[in-house]
Image (cartoon, rainbow, N blue to C red; front, side, top):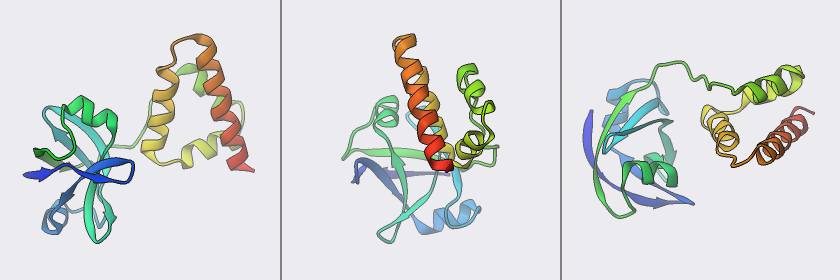
Length: 147
């Protein structure tokens, strides 16, 4: 389905509001998983309910990739996302997770978007040392969460 929406401020990011009937028409419940496309850029997310509105959050990265800014009116294409919510694990992360089942369980409990963010953070490291530090911090945080 397509509709026009204004990019509005929402917490530390921005969002677009969806009409309630659009969420109902999608199916998938009150907070359906969706694929959102703006200006040819697509990302997977979930409908949020905030301040009585149905919202789709737009991170700084997605705003940049879609070439949009707060205050703009944009054409939005949205569809129900029923694909599995799996995040490909780079080999070093996979090894660290496989080394300790409690850390693996803690990682798998994280929401899809947060798992994606952690993997992206590792992959964006500019050096092997930075990547190793980031991986160690992630493993430490997962270990603390599993305790």
